[in-house]
Length: 198
Image (cartoon, rainbow, N blue to C red; front, side, top):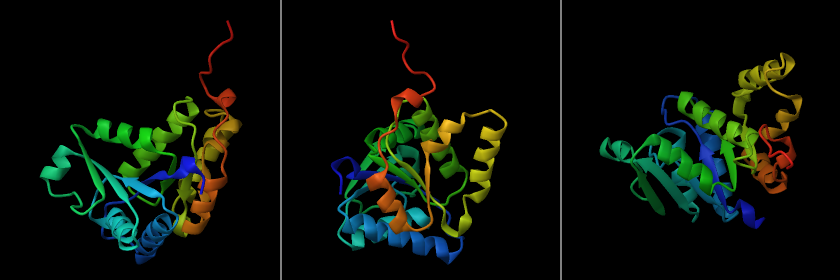
């Protein structure tokens, strides 16, 4: 395991009313993160895919670093047995703390919150603010409509074709782990606002 991938952020759903195939994938990913000595960083939740992921990482002896805003703690959403819990004042601070700690990002299926986090980290990479791997874990072809939308952005010139390399796609947790090990850091020459030579 490469040193730069020792801490991986996982974005995922907090909903508990979704198909069991997604829970199985979250649990498998958690197990594999633990077995590869990769610290899992996420939103510190105890429900949905986030809960399944956290319980699996801990069950198999791994570490989970949760980052959660205080209002979510007050609402009882937080997992109370994580390796480390960081409490922020705002959701924006939470997202920034997670991104700055991330040696890689894996996005399990999720709702609008997951989509927002994923879009932000891809944007950061486009701007040269984040250069590490981003992997969409496309369980059950969940992300296919989004990937088609990205293609439309490129086809209609809203995004450069080069930017299709900002993210990678995995169909299984094992493939996601392999990708974060193999994907090189993003080439700064492809960033949208690279520094001009003086």
